[in-house]
Length: 380
Image (cartoon, rainbow, N blue to C red; front, side):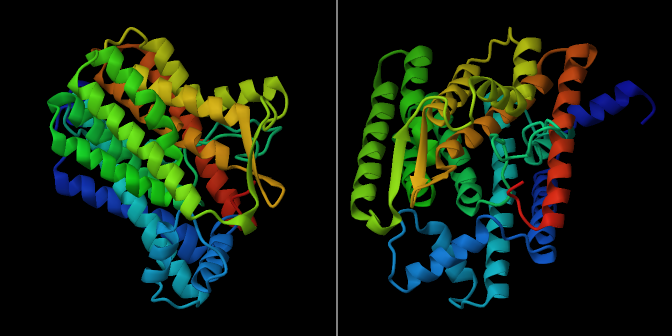
C-alpha cells in the first residue's frame, strides 16, 4: 500500500472472494469453541445442565419442548453418554452454528445495503461476534445484563443462523413477493420453534407493522400475516403437545422487577446498546428503512424482558431475555452496516468514535472470555 487512500480502497472497495469469507469464518468459529470447549471445558452454567436434560429425555423421564439441540448432541456424540464425546458433539454444534452466523450475517448486510463483501465489513462483522454489554466495574459481566452475544447457551447459538435465514428470506420476500420465499420463511420459523422460539416473539408482532409501513396493504402484507398466524398456532400447538408438567415453568408479569431498580433497567439498555445508540446519533439521517425494523425488534425484546420473568421449579431464569440478545446482535449488525455504507464515513470523526465504542464492547468480551475460562463458568 502506497498511501492511506490505497489502503482505504483495499479495505472497502476490493471484493473479498467467497472462499476467503468461508475460510475466515470457519477458522474463527473453530478456534473460538475449540478453546472454550475442547481446551478449557467450560461447561457451566448451561452445557452441563443440557447434558443432564438430554439423558433424562433419552430415558423418557421428560419431554423437551424444543428438542433439536439435544437431538443433535445425541447424534454427534454417537448416542453415548461419555462426557468427552458429548463435549466434542457440542463443539461441532457450537462452532457450526457460529460459522453459519458469520456467513449469514455478511449475506444479510449485503442484502440490506446492496453492497459486496469488503474486508472492512467482514472485519466489523467478526468484531460483532465477540462484543458483549460494556462491563461497568462495580457490576458483574453478564449477570443482571443483556448481551448481544452469549457463548454458553447451545439453543440460542443454534437458533441464530435460522433467525438470520428467516430475516434474509423476509427481505427477499418483500423484494420479489414470490410464494417460494414465503414458504421458506415459514419453514425457518418452524425450525426455530423446535430449537428456541425466542426470535419468533420479535418477528411475529413487528414484521407485519414494518411491512404495512414500507409496502402498505396488499398481497405481501397478507402473506406476512398468514405466516404470523401459522407460527402462532404452531407455538400454541407445540406448547400443548410437549408440555412438561414436571418442569413447573411459569411466566410472571412484574414490570421492572427482573433487573432491580428502574435505573438498573436503564443501565442495561445503555451498556448493551451503546454502539447502536452512538451509530443512530451519528448517522440518524440515513434513509435506510430497515432501521425501523431492527430498532423495533430491540424495543419489543426489551418490552418482554422488562415486563416479564419466568421461573422453573420456583427459581427465576433468564428465558425472557434471550429474544433481546438476538435483537441486540441484529442491531449491532445493522449499525455496522450503517457505518460502512454512509458516504464519506471515513472523514467523519463520528465514524471513528462509533468504531472505538465497538472496540470497547469487544474488549469487554475478550476480558469476559478470559475470566470465564479461569473460573470455568460463564455465569460471572
